[in-house]
Amino acid sequence: MLNQENVIKLTRTKMPFGKYAGRYLIDLPEEYLLWFERKGTFPEGELGQLMQLCLLLKIDGSDNVLKFLR
Image (cartoon, rainbow, N blue to C red):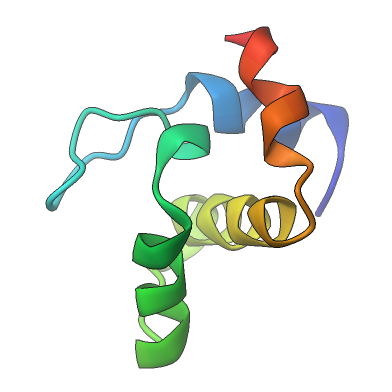
């Protein structure tokens, strides 16, 4: 799941719906991603996988390193 292609997608893919529509996935607040995790309702497919990866990176603090790629 953590590969160069997915890391780049996190910095270039925008959230397509909801409260944070239009924001890059890497810029989504950790609390928003945690809400999806608690509910067990990450979107299906690639978007959901990227959001889960983004949450993992935010939890361990690696997300700040990726923001310069944008």
